[in-house]
Image 1: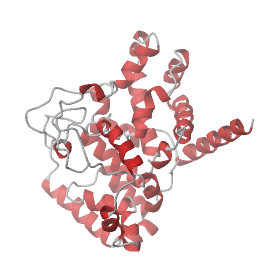
Image 2 (image 1 turned 90 degrees about the vertical axis):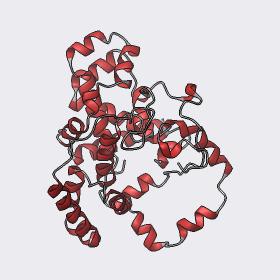
Image 3 (image 1 turned 60 degrees about the vertical axis):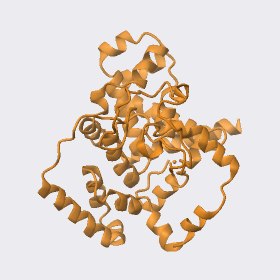
Image 4 (image 1 turned 45 degrees about the vertical axis):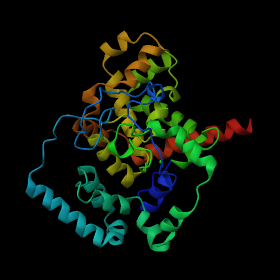
Amino acid sequence: MATSPHPSAVSDTLSSISTSNKMATSPRSAPDTISVCSTVSALSSCPDRHGFYGGVQFTDKPKAPLPRSQILAREKKWLHMMDIWREYMAKNYKKVRERCRKGIPASVRPRAWFYLSGAHLLHEKYPNLYEELLKMPGNQQYIEEIRKDQHRQFPFHEMFLDEEKPGYLKDYFKPGMEMLQRDAGMLMALVKKTSPNVYRHLQKHKVEPLLFMTDWFLCAMTRTLPWDTLLRVWDCFLCEGIKILFKVALVILGASLGPRSIRKVCNDLCETLEVLRSPPEKVLEENFMMHHVLNLNLSREDFEREHQRQAELRRRGKSS
């Protein structure tokens, strides 16, 4: 698990983000390829403010804007911080984290992600490599794998409706998905700590974590969260690492299955999975999600301790 806040560590987590070359020609094509785990709304005749025509990311509700003076002040702070980025990361990382948690201003988010992901370090080291790679033919095996997975990401965004327009966690996609299995064990241990009633419910009905968390982690929550919430989560994810995805998963589990009245009507595995595949809208709303993610009672040491425990369990399992 990538728990280091340094951008180069985060870039390792993101190093296999892939760019897709082709997409379905229409959002209505191949409806059977949309996962049952996706919540797909009726298609709109025009895109929302983020460019989505439908799907879980679509929203027709206007977002209440921050005061202009506050936006300008945040933009100014980010621009200054990026001008002396190494100094901040070396001496004042907590300030970077604090500003990510507040939400990066939309106008500077592309540049901020460039720094947070560690891409700027790679660009300094290999200034022409990206353009050179774009000109090279791709490995057909990997291209085919990407094409099979395209529908899982943004099938309803205006950028990806045409075939010729351009379209992400390397160790998760290795044969056997060993890291994902390890993180499934971690997630259940953390659920036991943060939401013991939910943990007992999952155990009672034999709800294995891979049945509900695979989508969340493999797709970095892109198929689960509304776009505004997703941007805020990624602001923190790029700064703090994969523990943010764990925290989002724990909030969804705790808020969706925490109420006794909900658990009472989930009498088996299928009913429990249905709740987790379609969390209440309130749970996924930006302010609710970020408030609970940032106030979850888990320390970095909790994550590291559980990571080491799960790694040791898997080593023992291999040697036996």
